[in-house]
Image (cartoon, rainbow, N blue to C red):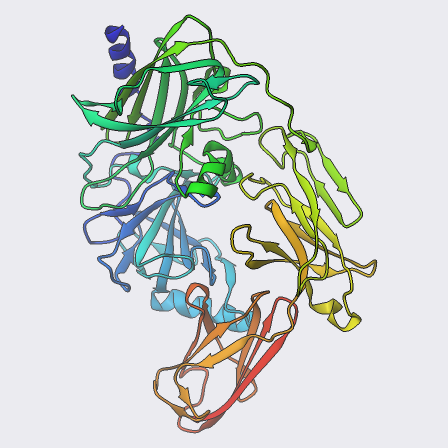
Length: 570
């Protein structure tokens, strides 16, 4: 058998993905060593990571260069996501993306700023006419930063297929990145999938810790595992690259049972339309409850991710009584470093059928409409990844709420697409109707999180939701808080280059803001993660050397409004 496994190993190592592009076509976008804080396909919240995160030595403002000859086709500026991002289209059918920038080079910055002033909006998505800004390979285009939803200074870098806009793994393009470390395997999970299926005599999933010795991974303590019925396997694994201890994602997972390759997962390319299927690829419930991610090496019926080159019976295995099973994993990174795990199972008979769960039947590929006295919900086909019984309860209201507490199952079941949720208002004063929203209530501490909503004339509050859990109607009557950072006593500036504020809101969140100086709109830039709003004095658009009147208007999600006014000299 070891010769068969060796043959499989050699086959897998000799079949890399080869983009149809010449070696070294792309140059590094930074002139610092390419150490990574994140890699392609890494497991993130609700999506796979679509590029690589290049470390910038803990700094912002490093020069960013075009990876190849091309033309700038898009500039996107936002308080979230990639923050300030630049897109360059190249003649060989690829587009590169540079995200979380602190700024653009001068001509691009002025071009974008003109659009922002024309639209009177900080957030803009600009389709730049092709040929307006042509760039050469290695030409300065921007500066690295920490904008948008970035968790620290770095450059997010992508290579996309221009026609499909599918991101392609940048590590396949011969960048000078050193990686001599194989993936790290931490834990194995076994799942009973059919009615009566069992793992070691119990009808629930079971984890097994892994240890490394003799050149491979093994189950800690070498337990004798028994199983029966249809089961699935899961693996907790990470990858590391030289020069960084960042926990990166694995590139390839291959699962063999009794010398037959039944499952493979590979991260050469992604589709943004499929990225949310990550919530089916991983053990979402385990992540929600234990804050740790397992790759499920079996597919739910509603998982339409196309990153599984091999999926025999969707990776599910029927374990038969009296038979022995040898299970092996081969986990690989882009650079050919390999980790292996081999263990054995002994087949036992399935257990007696378990009792049927109570609840509303949910079929992953069918629509579902729930119509109750106090709640209505409409799920489109494909909202879930598998069939289950939805636990529905109406719980008594609590102080500060204007409806029953509606429990739609538990939050550890993922929802693929948004659904319409309507809750009947109770004892809601007419003057509070415009302030009513739906909130999700955390099961552990009862904290409320706004999920949106508007009061309807028929007495219901409705919104679109992308989660299950417990919901109710609350009201938001408090206006946002505006805290000046560098204007003291509404007059003197402690920073002559800019004026800054901190924004916060207690429930529905910051929805919009507008800053004017002397009655004219000015470009306040918003850093949502730090709740920081700043205007950098623009000498081309603001006459200096005089007194000015500043007005800042901030609104939350239900229209509560705060106004800050000040006079200052600059």
